[in-house]
Image 1 (cartoon, rainbow, N blue to C red):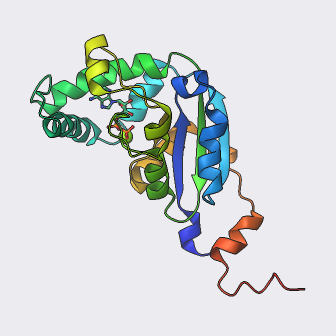
Image 2: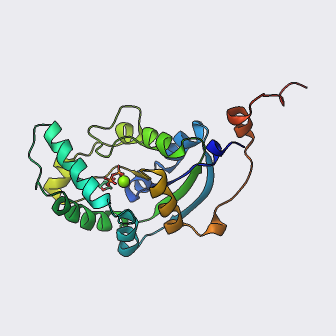
Image 3: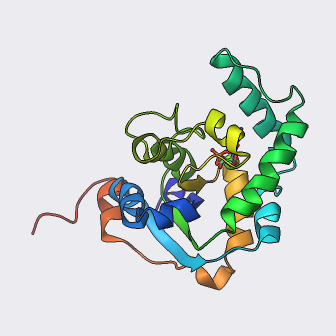
Length: 201
Ligand code: ADP
Ligand code: MG
């Protein structure tokens, strides 16, 4: 198998995805594109596990704050603060409440460009502006405006790693090495075999 086929990413169906009965629909999207599920489990995360998850990347606080400010600007609105770290401090506190409110389904998906493909299928962070056809664009209607008024995290059904480095750290954070299953999937031949010489009898 080519090295391409070995890229892995962490996905989590968040508590709202589980409660909205969308686990199957969400899994189907990643499965249908040709990715291989190599680990999965249902857990009720502790707030501390969630805080550690989001701060694995030391840059996450700055990037998320800046992304939020840019999203407000794009819509001609004022962000609650112009300090990215101040914005993220509130987001993180709300995320710890949101993500530990019930069971989540953690998964590891493997395949070519797994991180980028999963982000594309998942859609942008704010459901109001996520692309139509993406999970966040199709199945939920939340916005930063709504979540700010209520003082909560934006509910967007799924978590997906943002980069290969983030994926490596997050997979280790949620799974022991022995929970990751190495196996061959018949579909992979159709996606990665160079000569397709195993079809004709
Ligand atoms: P993503 O999940 O798309 O990678 P981030 O890593 O930037 O997004 O943020 C993590 C999660 O924090 C988001 O999925 C969302 O639930 C929540 N969140 C991010 N930005 C905001 C915001 N400005 N207001 C409310 N919640 C937010
Ligand atoms: Mg992220």
